[in-house]
Length: 130
Image 1 (cartoon, rainbow, N blue to C red):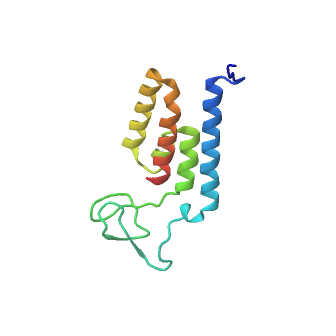
Image 2: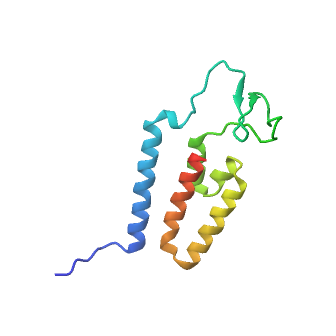
Image 3: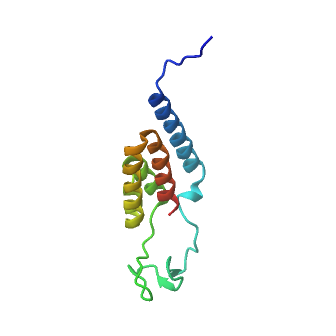
């Protein structure tokens, strides 16, 4: 007796991707600490993400290394990456990483289209945690 499925492999992959994304969205909703990074409320300074020196919260760039000091929402980056791929990384000004994921996804799609799902999931996780 052979087991057959009424769904194609592409449908099963899409269903799996949907389940993974729903679980990730549930985790984001349940864990509010993921949305907002904890920091002291009244401190006028915060560490630069690149060099670690103290920088005013009103500053656009670090006076020591020139890095941008704006804070980005991990949740918004997650949803942008979920919908538009590298846009989630570009939102956080991770330009090179966004283009690298885009190129890798295109190359993988040309070789093995089924594996694009894993590239897309990796891109979403990277955008949310970068």
